[in-house]
Image (tube, rainbow, N blue to C red):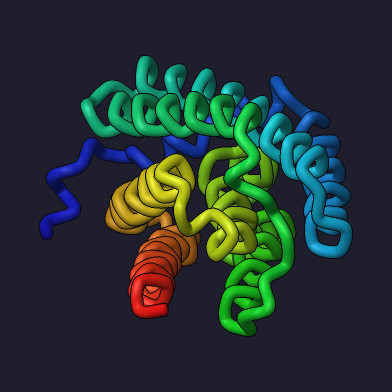
Amino acid sequence: MDINMFPPNELARLLHEIGELNTTFFPAHIIFAILAIVLLLFCYFRSSAWGSRLMKVLLTIIYAINVYGITNCAISLGGGFYAFNAAIHGAVTIMLAVSVFKDDILFSLPEQKDLRILSIALTTYGIFLYPVVELLLGYRWPEIFVFGAICPTTMFVEGVLIIAALNARGSRLFKWLLGTLSTAAVIVGFRTVLIGGIFDLPYLISGIIGFYVLLKVSVSGNLNHIKKNTI
């Protein structure tokens, strides 16, 4: 695919918009990150319905702010891609808000080793490693993606959803939520890499991981259904 099909300096313009948003909302990123870490550890080690609800409330607030930021980018940068980005994450925000009032998505550390590793890897990368990699690649604050921005936040949310995967295997909302986030990660991550943002490659990979978890949950659910009918 010819990179010249994209507007000139699109990555620089996008990072400029991100820098403006970072400056406007700082230090909300730090506050959100601390709250997210505390709630995640609580969900890992002391899983409860109200702990899961608090996590979903926090994520809904962060995504609502993100939709505002993405909408600004869509207005400033133009093009259908950023409008799509705003729309798909607007849908995620609505689903997260609905999930607050449902207990079919409960966060607790799963016994399955692969799910534990994937959850820890995505949440850690989303909060800590995303900006570190950008800095190592030569980008500088405030024109970097940090937790609270859509890409690292989505990686974190995918990691959080993974720990609810087996408990929520019968939840349509869970499957729609993880499926939508994974689709956004693949499309947005791929597009950002194409315009030169190689730092978004892990974001793209996180979407593939999300689809793997969805497949695992679907297969596990089908096997359990067959087993029950056999008994």
